[in-house]
Amino acid sequence: MGSGGIIEYIINDLLNGDADLSFYESITTAAASYKGGAIWTAVVKIMTDSAFPIGAAILTIFMLMEIVGIIQRMDNAGQGMMGINIPATILIRWVIITFLYCHLRVVLEGINLVMADFATSIAYGQVKTFDFSALDVVSAISSMDMISQIVCYIIMMNIWFLFSALRILLNAFVIYRVFSIYIMTVFAPIPLATLPSQEFKHTAFNYLKSYAAACMSGAIILAAFKIYNLLNTNLLKTDIFANALSMVDAAGNPVPLTAGAFCGAMLKMLIFYGILVSAVLSSGKLSKSLLNAT
Image 1 (cartoon, rainbow, N blue to C red):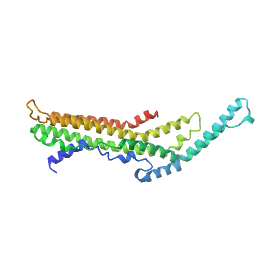
Image 2: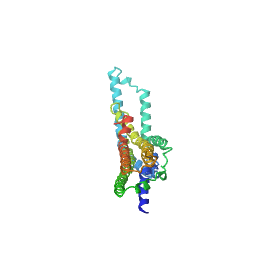
Image 3: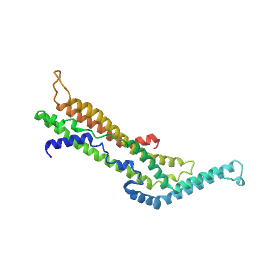
Image 4: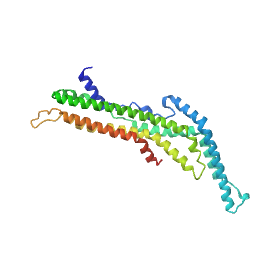
């Protein structure tokens, strides 16, 4: 590959490097099906063998505490021990809680599937790859003087290396998101064991919201990338590159692309990508705020 081919590859990569979103699987696939589901099965087994017995003991304690509380309230109301009739609603609530607790895997998989479907709907109809051939940027740079060419090449190479590093960071963060869902799944029985308690049940509800937020962050990541692709296509590729390469002077003669215009476009692209990285890294915090989770 010659120097022109390398430059064309780099510019094309900068313009279209994220249009395909190669890490879709990590976002649009529920944790139970990710990588064939073998990891999820192992995670659930760890949860069942370790955290579930602890959570079951805590659940039993909270249920007994609620029964004692009901007895004390009825005794204070003057009904005495002979007036103990646990309301049917309380019994039904405990049956439902116990049933859901014994089927945590189904509950967590359901949350995963809902959020994965949400992410898939956002990912549908991605922005098409930009037609780089319509912009003869390589020829435009080659027509510059030697100093301007060197400046453009240096700026372009540095930005490309930075882009590559940021992509690695984004891919690592997406993998971390899946990893955090697995960790939360392992310890799910412990916070959910507080459901029967009137005083501590907010712990279980907050956990469910936090778990849903961790799954929802994938949809936010996809939305951020889709908005980035739209902005990058409409503003940078069209308004900056196309306009800069099609400018004419008063006599109607084409105006050569300047190093300043090219480097300015590259830097603006870097700013957009920096905003994208910031949005992706803060997706967890944003999803928690949307679901009012702490």
